[in-house]
Image 1: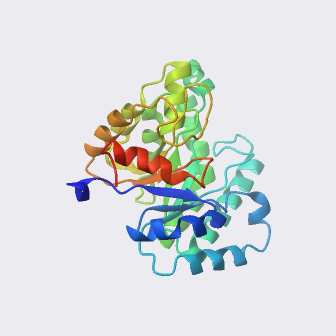
Image 2: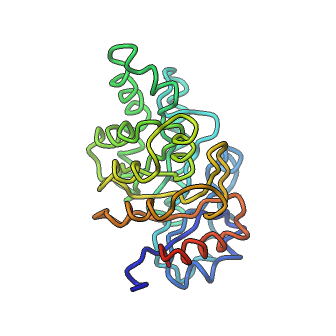
Length: 273
């Protein structure tokens, strides 16, 4: 029976990969490397980091991804100069994917709480937002397709889970899919009345390719271990179980040293292995 349960993976900085390497490799767990979203890293010689990661992953045959750049920008900027910088940063992320053999990159959603309340206040705003995202991402998507990388768009402030799904469908590309962050969804639900986390899973359906698993208390973006906050994990994983696809399941928490305690909590609930 346990073999039918999803296998939980982790988002790790390369320095933490050494600690959890055996746990990752024992089930070839989904893995997301979190070194390459920093501008300081991307603008430096990061080849030693890539070589270290490849060495630590000798024997790894699981699904490998990275968290793409996100600090300091949005992918729907109205300023064409800013859009050019964003495109460059995401191309640098794809450089890192190529260097370590990653096949997925997380990109942050453009939708904000303000958007939810105002996009329909100005006719055409929804289509204009999607067009600006395309102006930023189209060259990135074209390269991702050639490179065999999925770009997964993660909810940040998203209030309506369908907005991001519509955005993903607009690309009509196998290289663009939906990501869900459970903590971000629960925070939007708790503070602004967005749907609960399982609704985000159901809305994404077959477009869902990636889940950040983290717990919150409904007040802040805690990135706590599962079990430390107030998310209804049984409801979340029931929704995951209804899917026809198998999204990458990634525990993404601040306490990476004790990350496996969060995995153990979900395992004790009979939800993952």
